[in-house]
Amino acid sequence: MRLATAGYPLDFFDSWAAYEDKLHRWVSDAATNGADLLVFPEYGAMELATLAGADAARDLEQSLHAVSERMPEANALHARLAQEFGVHILGASAPVFDGGPRPVNRAHIFAPFGAIGFQDKQIMTRFETDPWNVVPGGELKVFDTTIGKIGVLICYDSEFPLLGKALEACDVILTPSCTEQLSGYWRVRVGSMARALENQCVVAMASLVGTAEWSEAVDMNTGMGGIFGPPDTGFPDTGVIAEGTLNQPGWTYGDVDLQTIDAVRETGRVRNRWDWANQLGRDSQVTNQILR
Image 1: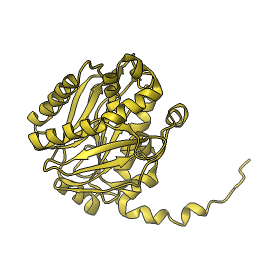
Image 2: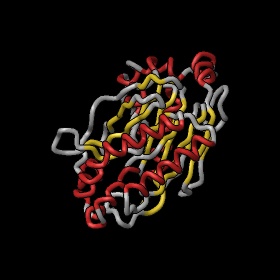
Image 3: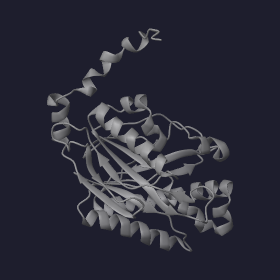
Image 4: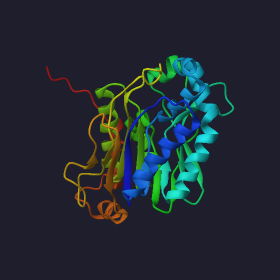
């Protein structure tokens, strides 16, 4: 299958039709280039706050509510586009108030025949905890699709190996991200590449790019799309299947063969996925030896 990961810029919209047009262009472009699975970034849905006006978009708390209120319409649009173009789509994540007093950070996944799922972020960053007060959501999920088993680790989640290990059944893990600084981008990228190494799978990273001066939440964004695999048999020696251009809007494409993933897990030069259990016990047998 062909993966498409976004370097996605945020826009200020004066109408719902303008948002529809943008999403249609992005999905159409990826589908025209043969993509089967499209990955949008973390908090890419924050641009929906602009539909409530400039004051609401600038105010952090108002923007969280404004985006959440628009998500049913945005999900319906993504579902239509997935069916129209025959693709799977991981939509940009959004703050969603789902019955609780505070929002979760949620990304929805859409199949071309109408099925919809979602994944909530597990571990909050410092800015999500304060001042955003976004809270951890529901459990991790494995999405069993017609193009393979897919998992989602939203941004910071990709930096935690036990979360990645919980998705070891997945052929592809998606890491939508939103990072202000270059260092933040590299933290998520290093985490993504580490998860690809440990699970001997493919990890696809999408990023917000550019500035959004109308937003307190996502005003500065650094990153690019990237698709990574284990640096082993059947994959590039660097583990980098494809990478975009830093802060350049657009899709990054990479071709992935599920049989190659199966093969590296069985006959690769190393077997990280299978040898994980060999750590257990040894990690608690640390001794302190003085050398001075």
